[in-house]
Image (cartoon, rainbow, N blue to C red):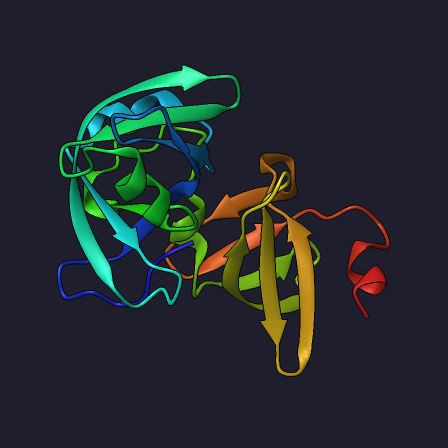
Length: 177
């Protein structure tokens, strides 16, 4: 998911703050990345409030794993009360700071706005949204029709500057109608 337009480029969602941790202002982050250990490489993290409009920059000082969550210490957050006020905030990083995608990898945010087509050439609309959950979902819109497609590499056969080609299981598109 990308945060709305910014003059210095889009922000990419790393996760959501789910709770305070301890008394020194640490937060627990539910990551929405395949590589949560990489969160430690970003010195500055962008946090949005519940209205998703107010973006504030925080300094990341350290991270560590805690099960499926990541514990993050922010320099500006020094006690539990401050940490509790951040619960529900989303944590973002500028797309320009992401490491290059590998040869068979693609950043899901980079699919936004591209034409979606099936391997048979059927137009599926435009990739317009990414929903983060236990299984990330791409939202494709074709006029009034909306298709929800699991964001898995096996369904994406190719990506170029303007188009994403999908090889979807039989019945998946029809199921969305």
